[in-house]
Image (cartoon, rainbow, N blue to C red; front, side, top):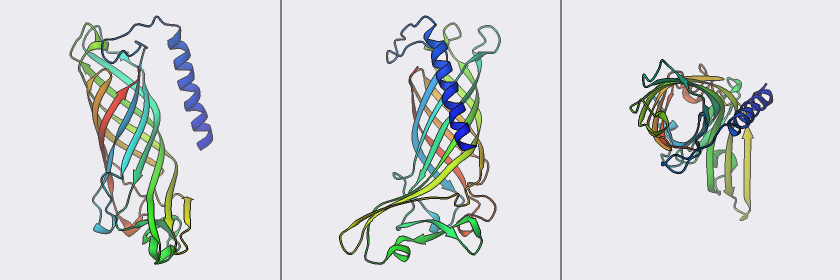
Length: 247
């Protein structure tokens, strides 16, 4: 199912680019972007877990978000300033937990669960941790309504967008890199579900010009499913950052 979702996503983007190449290309004055029907957003930002115990705290700069979404515009009326913009893409959220902690399976609950443990407790007390994070990768379907202040030329207009998105969890994994007491560097990747909810959904806003935007997302569902997450937390997610539009 996950492989099929990726294949469909790649085919969708390829067909869109193929049709776009047949159209007349012009350049806008903002960033010299080619004027192709639609928008390809590359989002960079940070993610925070809300409603969590102190033991599940994350480092701000290490907890990052990356999204790549293609949106196709559909005009709402004739020069009303409004467009409906359905999209598709991928999203990755990385969490860097504090105090050398990370997610591990919790056999007391089941294989689809997780608990928070200190790395020294698992790999030994005499280790030096170089890298430590957990990540979740999604295929997302964002839907948004935009208002363009320049009603005669949407491609050169300041705009405000409000929308929501639904995402399906492709995979989750942890990455740990440490140096042991024999001065050997170990790299460990563990791909499990770790109790992440298979679906996510939330609302977001995007504000800016063609070529550059700021955005924010608020997750309406719990990051972890039921009681499968560490400390049985009911955490939700807050993401925010900037984005560049490639066309």
